[in-house]
Amino acid sequence: MNKPATKSNKGVLLLNLGSPDSTDTQDVRRYLREFLSDPRVIDAPAPVRQTILNLFILPFRPRQSAEAYEKIWTEEGSPLIVTSYQVTDLLGERVDIPVELGMRYGNPSTEDAIRRLKGRGINDLLIIPLYPHYAMSSYETAVAKAQDVIEKIAPEMRYTVQAPYYNDADYIDALAEVTRDTLEKEDWDHVLFSYHGIPERHIRKGDPSGCYCLRYEDCCQREHPAQALCYRHQVFKTSSLVAEQLDLPREKYSVTFQSRLGNDPWLKPFTDQELERFPTRGIKKLVVLCPAFVSDCLETLEEIAMEGKETFEEAGGKHFVYVPCLNDHPRWIDVLEKFTRTFINQGGSPVKITHSQQPAAE
Image 1 (cartoon, rainbow, N blue to C red):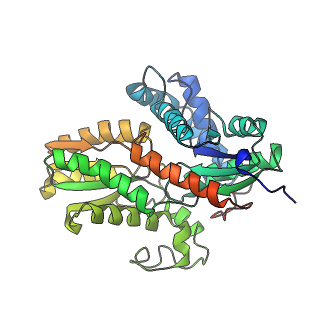
Image 2 (image 1 turned 120 degrees about the horizontal axis):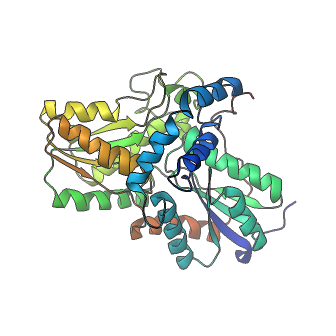
Image 3 (image 1 turned 45 degrees about the vertical axis):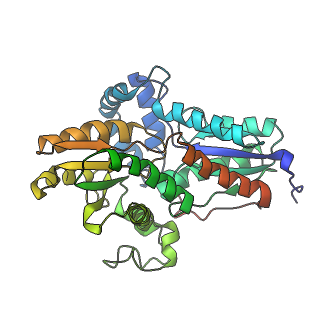
């Protein structure tokens, strides 16, 4: 039996997916190999996954991705890593327990973060995935990695996993506030919520009933237990709650999905295709936000703020404004502080998160 934990041995682990160490093609290749070897990202049997990776992705993608990273890289390094460290420090200044940062892929690694926490005597841990919505390729894989590391190097450590907070009132307020600032300053026709896409099969795999998700046209609007693991439902809910806070009429906003990979069916509509169509529908002034990310990264800064803007303007759009992620906004730190203080005051018990599926057979 675990020893009862006290306030003095509690800690927090913030989890994100990661970034290459540099824009060098070799560093990008190393990062992509680790990322795309994850069976929760490319959920195919290992021989198939490695064939796809080694024959169709790694020979070409690293150079292209390195060029994209160069467009957003700062003097301090990867925007995702720099911002995540800033958030870690800001949260640490507000609470009197250790806060560490770990990445699912690359550095700073989840294992190093947990070793540091163990070295500081932490035996009761709050794990906060920096992804508000539950997806096997983001939230789930980050948590599963942390669980595996804890079981390997700190089996005595208790841990509590922060549940997806896609509908948390304070998170919604924070999103609405940063978006409202833009809407009040800019002239706009439409607001676009662009979320990272995932294959439709991931939605079906996350359905514990096996017979609900994507089986009905309005499945995400009905109440159902599957929605606890349904990324599609959760992003729609976030969007509707933020729109409600901003008093957006339903016809004034829409939801799309970006960053698809391969030819299998992915969640639709696709962001790039909608950006091309908007001007033909009379939408010439567009505001875009990406609530699936709490920190700006390649997918927001390069894919949306740069490539998306170019796509929209080449199609006839006149004004494109990207709303930055929450990043180190004080309202976002408020949300993380709330989660942490709830943990400090109420404590937690050992948790095994319910995964949407087991990894594909190796």
